[in-house]
Amino acid sequence: MNTDKLKNTIDSIIANTFSRLENVYNNHKEGFDSDLPPTRERQSRLVFPAYYYDENGEKRIKSTRISEQELRFAFIEEFNYYCNENEINLFYSVETPTKDTYSDFSTNPIPNPHGRSGEFDMVIYDENLKRVCLIEFKANNADEVDHEKDFLKLKNEEKDDVNVLRYFIEIVKSYRNDTIESLKGKFRFKGKLTEIRCFALEGKSRRNIKNEGEDISRMFN
Image (cartoon, rainbow, N blue to C red; front, side, top):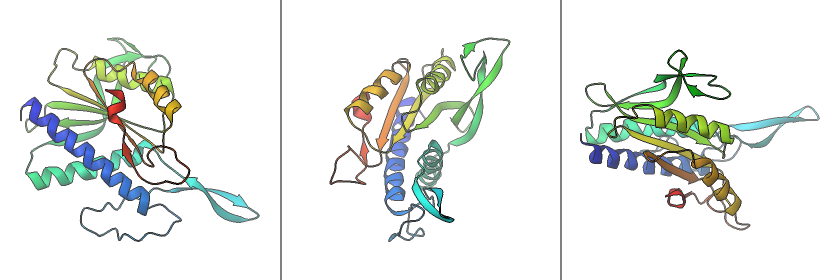
C-alpha cells in the first residue's frame, strides 16, 4: 500500500472512530439508561465508566470517566472492522517500544543512545510487519509535558523516513475558545510530519445543546 492510500485508510478509520465514540458516549455511559443495544451492527460494546463517591453510605455517580483508553479501544475496534470489511492487510501492536532511546523520559526526556525506549500507544504495520504508522492518543487537554513527550517520540522515531505516518489523536469532553488556544499551545511541539486529529464529544460548550460531537481537527491545521 502506498503512502497516500495508507493515509486515506488511517483518516477513514479515525473519522469512523470519532463517530463510534460519539455513539458510545451518547448511549453507553455507566449509570445512565441506554436505548441503543450493544449488539447492533457496527455498534461498539465499549462503555464510558462512571466515577463514584460515597454519600451517607450510598454510592453515587460523580461524573463520567473520559480517558485516552476509550479512544484507543474504539480505534482498535474500528481498525479491525475496517481492515476486515475492506480486505486490507494491516497489523498493529500496542504499548510499542520506540527504536530510539531516551534519558529521564518520565520527567524531561532527551534522546540518548545509552537510555531506554519510550512507548508508542499504537503502531501499525504493513504485510511485511514493517512499521508504517505511529500513533499517540490523548484525552482531556492533558498537561503540556505529556504532549511534549508524545511529540518528541513521533518526531524522533523514523525521522529519516518521511513515508512513516505519524498521528496524534485527542478527545476532549467539550471545548471553548480557551480550550482551543490551550491545545494550540501544546501542539506547537508536533513537528512538520505529525498529523493532528481532535474530537469534542459534546461539541462546543453551549447551555442548551449537549452530546453533539464535533471533529475539531480543522482548527489545528
